[in-house]
Length: 415
Image (cartoon, rainbow, N blue to C red; front, side, top):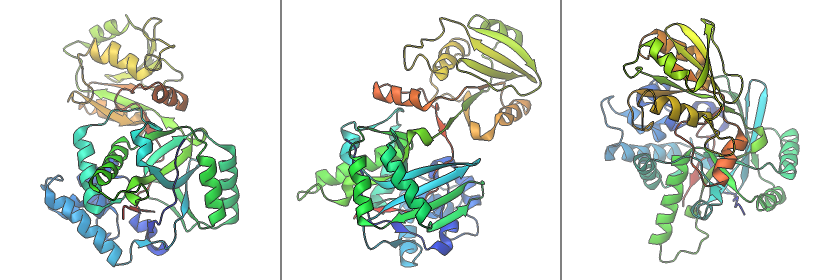
């Protein structure tokens, strides 16, 4: 059963919370982070992407960059920009986008739950990305950013959260530059904390929704500390890491699309002919076409949108991986026709989150930087859970959760 733990969070004063909170480290490149933090000394980007405080040509993996993360973290604490709560609390973090609000429970997950499979994952991680975040956790001795978890909804927890947010004013309540409304409550009442933890202890599994590398890094560093401590008791703070847990019925996965740089030497006509062996191909003209059901795709190429509907035999609805549209596209188009074998390493393909809209796919093809674009129907939460429950792994770049968590509203110290 899943462990949820209260902790003494490090939090910004209300008056600077909006300036300090930032987008996650992995949704911005260094140049974008540098621009976003320009003129804002409070931005958490100075800690989670400390290369922005160096000249642009600086390698973000240099030891001096990680040391800068610790220097800036220490500065934030000394300046009173991050202040530790006196007592252990749980926190509620809600986000509103397009009129819909999702409510997450902020607490610590257990390293042991990750190692023994109570926390389930659906993506592979890359060792270089794991090590990057591990270095960051080691040097700061903190989880600077939460990971994004989901769990099978529990009505009693929903009721407690609903009552609490109706009866209490949030400590942070602001609309970020991207239009997402963020709300944050501190649960200080011991009895409510105990009630939530007791109900959460009946949850059989939790699932990594977003932040697989941060999750792995946090758990592996915690386990390192355990192995290096001859007086380890199991109660140390390093046995836990920062997570926001959302009920599965409140989350939405949006599409995660693909653009390719070339057609593997094929003409447009030959490419469409090859596609017709696996798909029903229909030209839709120059008006953006969005897939409307599972196994339906859209293709944009040379100023024209097409509907692609996978033919029977190209998918297996009884296989949690074989049913996925990313599997169909990867196997039947990217691999067999375009000869793109490894989505993780190929330079001929790029991925575009659905939050950017299908207009972004059109733009990149029209600019001739890409030859064709494919839009997919979004994966469902049930598909994600089925894959994690069966021990399977999704193909790369399958899920895109929106809205993203803001980092910096609460930090977890490993001391």
